[in-house]
Picture 1 (cartoon, protein in one colour):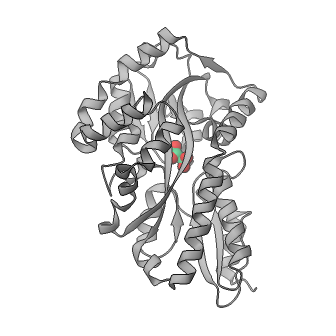
Picture 2 (tube, helix red, strand yellow):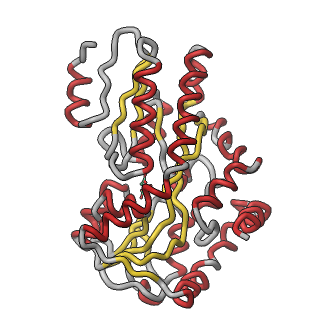
Picture 3 (tube, protein in one colour):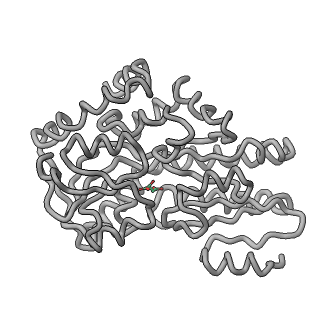
Length: 328
Ligand code: LMR
């Protein structure tokens, strides 16, 4: 396969993950923002590309662009609608301008763990959410898991009052802004690629994310410590544009989506292990992790759960009830 000058430049900037495409192959770009190692999304995207490149050789060729090398999450969906990128897996917090249905996943303490998120997504209401943006040109294909979020800051966080007055980076989601306000803190929405620098320079005091993101972006190096709050879920939706999917031959599309569904099953089953490894890697690197007593954790629940009532209209009381039934 020969590389055009543009492709070479992209390879150089993107690093690993590029499969040189042959003439006549459908070129499929998958852009994401995380690292590839010890990361649920990074591992899943690479596996997806490896399988496509092997099993669809001659028909299709997938290139993965990790670490925001092609797009930040706030650009990637528009780029997808323009046909400049074919797959992405933004977190559910990043679809705000397309649908408000995913707000349920951002509500603090709505899901007790990743298994509860998975069970909700497997319900009829959850499955229907994949089609919630079709009118806007985006088809949700598979939910990919990451894990539960933890809080870190430039000072110890033990009780919710410790967060009061601090500024936290959040993903661009109104629920997450309201969550920080419920703690008496302020929220600063910001692209993932900018968070490390913002923490290091003190533009923000803290952040919330999963173990794999805290490890992968080295946030623990520029924070006092991380408190194991497990207060919210961070999950992804693999999306493609309706137009692009429609443009594929049925046989090519079926093979691609079958591979995607098998990769999803395999990697979603392994997220607990990746999460635990990333947590341990933070400790091994000298990062501080604080665990909460049941009483301390309850204080965080009491402080943040009132946020639910602000978003009941967006997410539906029946969905909140369904999520709570799964937790029980
Ligand atoms: C974030 O912006 O913190 C996350 O959505 C990044 C990711 O893709 O896990």
